[in-house]
Image (cartoon, rainbow, N blue to C red; front, side):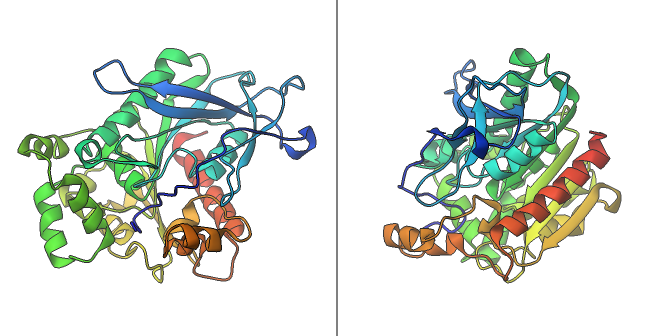
Length: 348
């Protein structure tokens, strides 16, 4: 079992009709494919956005399955008038675009276009070191996502106000796309010091068979200058990011860490590493008391922990948080913090 992120074989219900009364207003939804024009396979992705109310569209629940609670949307609804800031979201190791729908829905209600894409080789049901070990493709996926919006939705997007948000390995992806640089040698040295660390296990598993040229690519500059802000949600692989690149970070960064009691990813060594190296004027750092690493994915249904445990022993902890607050309350706190940050740094 990989604790760095979740891979479940339960499957996900993509679309389920709802009664109109069950749907909060004006969140649109589209399935799209990004990339695919540079020799790489297209990435499955979704777009959430502020939508015009349309009573002819049947409200739908997306990302709902036996374990996790989905979110209500209006598929293919027309986009609300105006140009909207863009947020690109990156999932964690073994995750997928569904994992932060709770946040994407909140951002769309607040007026943002939100694009979330799968990362081949590190997504649910597709953990393939030959592909996923090319970790530098993840920040390239962020660039592809912004390119897609520029080409296909430019009339709706304010591309002067672009942010990237990532959870776990997606937080690392967000930092790379925003301007951080990665040192494979530094990461290997750290893993010698922390051989049982889950981030190291995932990193070594993915990259163990990669050629030297892949590590050269991994150490390259993958910044997209269109990104004006970054948010990390209990990120991993932070200790491979060079202190020099973090000290020179060109955009503001909101670093949200799980409670230090969380067993999955050592927040003090990962998010804390960012906090100790980013310049104070670019950094907002906050520990979410009571949050586990998995508090940043979907809310669990009643009985979900037992269902996950039966499917894969040990995975029941995915539904556990560290404190007494509900995951819904924790996510409301996280969403409010992110919205305030984006409003401050993007002027949205």
